[in-house]
Each structure stands twice: as structure tokens, then as C-alpha cells.
Image (cartoon, rainbow, N blue to C red; front, side):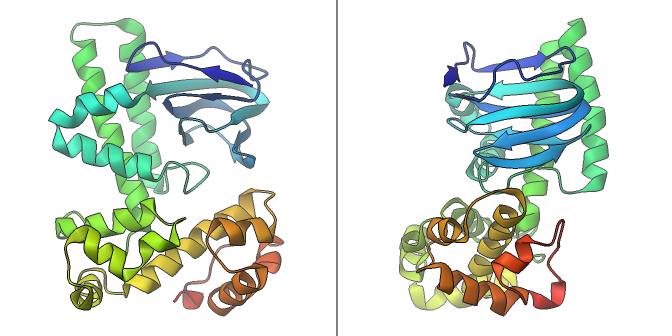
Amino acid sequence: MVKDHLREPFELVLKEFMDVCPRGLHTHTFFELIYIVAGTGRQCINEIEFDYRPGNLFLVAPNDTHVFKIKAPTQFFFIRFNNIFVKASKKEDELIQRLELILQNARHEPGCILKSEADKRSVTHLMGMLIGEHLHHDLYHKELIAQLVNTLLVVIARNISQAFPEKIDETSEEKAVAILQYVQANIYYPDKLRAQQISRHFGIAETYLGSYFKKHANETLQQYILNYKLKLIENRLMQSNMRITEIADEFGFTDKSHLNRIFKKYRGMNPTEFKKRPGAKTNSHLLI
């Protein structure tokens, strides 16, 4: 399999219209934001497929396997960066925090990373400006590109943060947000999500952790962990060909029966029934 490398810490690439993916199934050593300027088709990342259309934005992490299955001639705009770019950004604490939030969630939620319709419209304008500066190299174009990319990262971070409880926002205590980010980053590692481990990691007494989290998130820590895990499982069911046993193993359930029982309790149907509902969305009254 072809593996691509990035010669610079950061680069922008606007492709001409394509009928087929020139790279085939491939992977690379850098992070890649992929914006769909025009065209339709299917994006396949780690064997999970989803439709794409103009205005979609995808994030591909290092070592992810991916390929585009193009239906209508498509134009892609790529924003690529590697660990050198991330490390160089540490002088700007807010930027690195946004990057960390984005990168921690790179593999968690397949599909377009823009959830807000308003933000999708804003990103369309942002991308238009980025492409213009990239193509024309006008005075101060490098400075403008840096500012526009930073703004884009803020928008992406906000959309990713929609997985946070409603009570959590930019005014919330830094430690409460950090706990949520920690949970999201370690959702596949049950041992790291034990109260004792989280308490030790954040220097909070285990007896106080539960009340602290509920005060700031308005739900218990275990409720949040399970809700977030079920949300990711829904994505797997709707957008991948993974077997139920594989999903159960990925998320630390004892076996298929354990996952079936938990999923049915909180979603009102078993995973197989959910998977057979194209585009199905969870009813709010079935949430924990």
C-alpha cells in the first residue's frame, strides 16, 4: 500500500477536478483536512464509507487507510500538517488546545466533522478565502492563511465539542473540559476510564470526582461515558460493515450479548435492528 509523506510541516493543495482517485487506497504520515469544493461520491476511511458532497470537511489521521470513490467529477482542497507543525504551535496555548481536541477525536466520529449548518456555511466562506489566498499569493497572504486556518480550527473544535454535555461551554472550568477531553481520547480503553484512574490523572479525590463532574456537566461521569460510547457505536452501525462482535470488542464490552443488552436498554432496539434503519437517529427520550 502506498504511504505518503509531507515535506513541509504544513501545506495547502487544491486539486483539479477528478474522475477517479489518483492514489488508490493509501495512507500517510500526516494529518489531512479534506474539503469538498465540488462533486459527489463516497469517502472510505478505515473501511468505513460515507457519502460526500460539496461543503463536507473530513479529517484523516496518520496511518488511516482511505480512498475516494468518485461519482461526479470532484475537486478537493487539502490542508495538511504533521507533528512538527503541532509542536511549533505550542507557543500559542489556545491553538494547541484546539489542535489537541481535534486530533484526539480524529478517529472517533467518521463522516463530515461539521455538525452545525451555520458553521458549514461559514466554512464555505473560509475555504473560499483560503483558496483565493493560496492561488493568488497577494501581499500578506501567508499571514492571512495562518489566521484563516486558526479560525477554521476554532470552528472545527466547536463542532467536535457538540459531543459535550449542554452545560459545558467556553465558560466552564478548564479541568471539567479537560476531563471530557480525556474521556473522549480514551473511550476505547476501559481501564483508563475508571474513576480511580481519572481521579489520579487530574489530582481530584475519587470521593469528590462524581459530584464535581455532575456539578459541571449536569450528568454523572458514567452516564456521559456510556452516552458518548453509544453515540460512536451508532456511527459504526450506520457507516461501516463491522460485525457486532467486532464493535463489542472495540468498545470493551464483554461480548456481543453484553452490547446487545446495553444498546437495547438505552436505544430501544438491538444493534442489528438499528443498523437496518438507514439514516436512523436516536430519539431523545431514549437517551440516558
